[in-house]
Amino acid sequence: MALIEAEGVHVRFGDRVVLEEINLAVDEGELHGIMGPNGAGKTTFFNTLTGSVKPSRGRIRLDGADIAGIGPYAIARRGVARSFQIMTLFNDFTAQDNVMMALPALRARGFDMRRAVANDSALAEEANAVLASVGLGDKAGISAKLLSYGERRALEIAVALAQRPRVLCLDEPTSGLGTDGTLRIAELIRSLKKKLTIIAVEHDMRFLFSLADRISVIHWGQVVARGTPRELQENPWVKRSNLGSFG
Amino acid sequence: MNGSSSEARLITPTMLGTWLILASVPLWINAIGLYPYIGVEILIWSIYALAFNLLLGTSGLPSFGHGAFFGVGAYAFGLTQFNVAANIWVCLAGATLAGALAGLLVGLFIAHRRGIYFALMTIAFGQIFWTISVKSHSVTGGEDGLLNILRLPVTFGIASFDISDNEALYAFVLVVFAVVVVLLWRLVNSPYGRILSAIRQSETRTAHLGYNVWLYKLSVIIISAGLSGFAGGLFAMAQRSAFPDVMNLAQSGLVVMMTLVGGGLVSFWGPVVGVIVFLIARDVIGAMTNAWMLYFGTMFVLLVLFRPEGLAGAAKQLAERWRARRAAPNALSSATRSG
Image 1 (cartoon, rainbow over the protein chains, first blue to last red):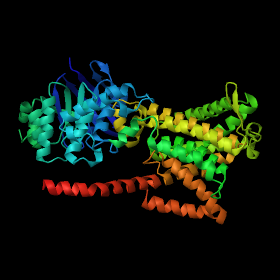
Image 2: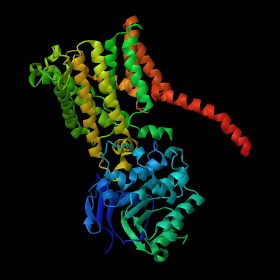
Image 3: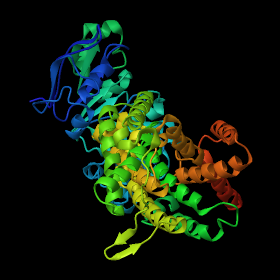
Image 4: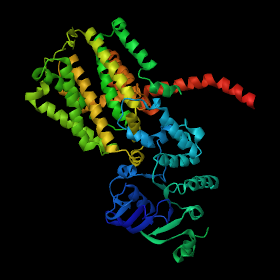
């Protein structure tokens, strides 16, 4: 059975229909890519999946349970983590503190007002391990706003990883990065494959075609094509739109 | 690592220094032409401003009608004394509880809001509480206020201390202030405080990390309002009365101004610095001219223009620059060595 199943997801803002009908299934352990032109509804679907947008119709099931419209925090608690295309970090915090905020161990004692976080070396160590896994091992004490753009992109993913998610949703993880940075992020995501179920929205086709197990193409608020990267290269829609030329 | 080690402490060197200076105030306050009561006022307003800054500085919630909670606490102290029991602890508990309940009521309407909408709603609620206090003569005494509130003796079992004179009251309020500082310092550095700070920086991300942002905001509004009510209770006791004016918009604005001038956005101690500067300026400049607010207002404008992080922020910057300058020769020599 698919871990994530979207069924007839329809979203409208006022009288503007943004998602017509999204049907999509992602298996456990799969890396599922989502592509499509600007304004196709990729990010809206992403926001619906992770809870910040409530669908007007349709269901989203995680492991069989409907999670549509239950809100971001409840969805996050069920093991769905997300990164943001427009970086959403805690800029006044150090890299370590950013990651620490996401740890389930900290979340479990969120209403603890008596003990100082700074006294808890277990939290710091766990956070440092996550930072090391994305190549930021030596940046723990640096304020998030002082990190380079590429480092901030990596931190975006580190924060999501620290949630120990079952499903990792990445919204354009290479947005704004040069070739080197993109390669580094690709390497990082490749190392996460099979350990996690990953859903990635991406503009960089070379990136997506080299990493994804399957890809869904969203256009006009619906999935217009789906399949493995190889299948999609043969897809008439993808060919026509010249999206798959990097294969 | 210095920063994080003080975060981990229950009592920091800064606290000890501050308490020592404050404890010495009665020895020299008359000599510099001021009087002990201003010390009482400074401590009570400091508690209030620290409570307020839990919302503004820590959680990023602009509460512009905070006087409501302070005022509710002041009335509750008097009403508890008249109707329940004339015991200082019972009355202070009544003031805290009334403030917290008012916070719960307001919080239910505003905890899901942010930014300007949050601010506007707090102003509206502040005005509602102020209007109620003016209009309900039978309970609050209306414009005449609630008079004959007593400075109740501080009791511990059979021991009892009289605090009816200003020096004794100052000593009592100083102990209370010290306890509040310790508790708040712990709170802002606890997991709970970190989450509040995360909410200030990005509500969206915090929610997506699995935190129920609404519940955290509601809870901190209740805590802040309860502590403001507590300060209001102390204030009613200090001035032996409670009036609606502490709840009006201008007075609610004062605590915002004090906190910003002091640097509450960047420093735990900012609100305290702001209160001290404001109240002393009021008395010193106020003794020279009636238009003292003109000068303080000008200072506020200049500060917002050139030092938006406030006095504590400016001091922090100076300290960092000084440290950097001291470290610079070493860095230079090590650079030459490695180069």
